[in-house]
Length: 422
Image 1 (tube, one colour):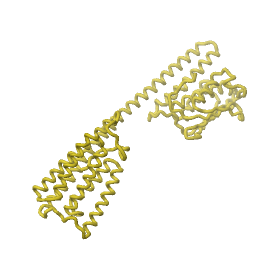
Image 2: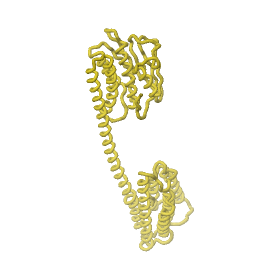
Image 3: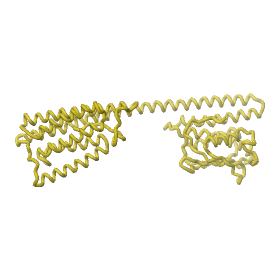
């Protein structure tokens, strides 16, 4: 008697008319087709039930007229949908008609002992398969109706006695059960099963597409990493072919910058969950170890001290951070830590706000003058450190209280396309 369709999260209050773009248009069309189908089916079955009551069970008066009246009015209500195209209006009218018809038939067929009373439970069930709000509403209303019917049955006041003839009551009970089973199984159960299969099929299709896109994304990171490694190899070959030590050092620095970016894509390629987030601590450790080997060799006495929590940051954030660390550590290894006994490099990252972080990094080497800065120096590395900090919507300052060179950088996680620094 009640149509089965899903009004969606917004359907508790309103469903817009048919102007729904894209995929929602097809989803709403499925709901429209379903409500029309259920309305036609319940109206036809109610009309047949009414005719059987009148001609075969010798039930006269209110009960058969209510069945036939419900069938006619509900068909008109369904037909009018073609004119106003208001799904909620059609649904609510059908629900109210169903409830009123069920109450009338119940009263005139035995009240609280009527076999038709179980149709009220179907109305509640139908409400819950549409939206939670409608389900709760019909649950409260029908519980109140059952209470009233009980009080009516136990009181002295009577609207009418049971109008079903004694010899027809078993048949009426049987047809009422058939009617209820048909609505639950043939209408709601069947359509719920179809909806479940469609949902399961859609979920499988979505999962296949996700896996396909994850594979493609993984391949992209793999190709980018390979291309960056190729560039790194070319720079390495070029630096070996140049006799000028200064130019060779510049090319080597560029190679390290490329490697720091390649490591990010390599980590994304190796991840099992394919998230676009990088675990910061393993990345910083691998980068620092590579820089120490690259500049000081494999047998150096450089200690790398990391104090980094389990942060996962976006690729748009990690690449600038990697370049900052690359420039800072490279300068420290080349110019700061000159003692043959070695030195220490420190990198720490702490979360200081909802989307804000603080990175403290540096070395215990000889340091450099306070007068040297991005505006007074021609050092590309120093300019990169300050420019990349601004790109991360952050601030940068030097800590002059410690021996060596230490920077304190506050930055924000960036979720956007990474733009290169000029």
